[in-house]
Length: 168
Image (cartoon, rainbow, N blue to C red; front, side, top):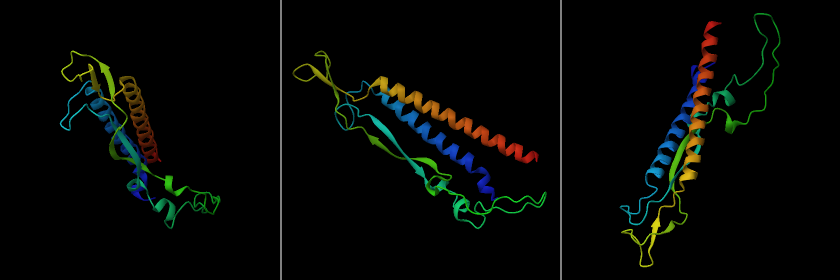
């Protein structure tokens, strides 16, 4: 087994950790700017979202297309026959990590809040506020935190398997 194959599980979990950390940072930025009515571009702050995609760099082609791809053979130790032939593999999902494709701006309409005393109020007394929903952002933060924790757990399980393999 190639050395890279040993660490592919850790690499995939690490890519998930990076992606979830970026999501947490963007959510924090959204929460910090939930009341920002003035930006450099003019107008209120626009909510940002992280767009994720599979990372082809984490794909190990040797596991699918290499000469030793999941073929059976007779073991040397007890001469048991491990079934020969190829097992069905969904190639686009083997060893695929995740990466941040881009940071997209949410184009949903801004909120209008009646506050005639606000310096940015229009002639009718309404202030155009950011399109950030604090409850939605907190829900997204919990989801990102749970996904981060799941990747940490998966990385720990992979590490445990590697440590057990060294004991053999």
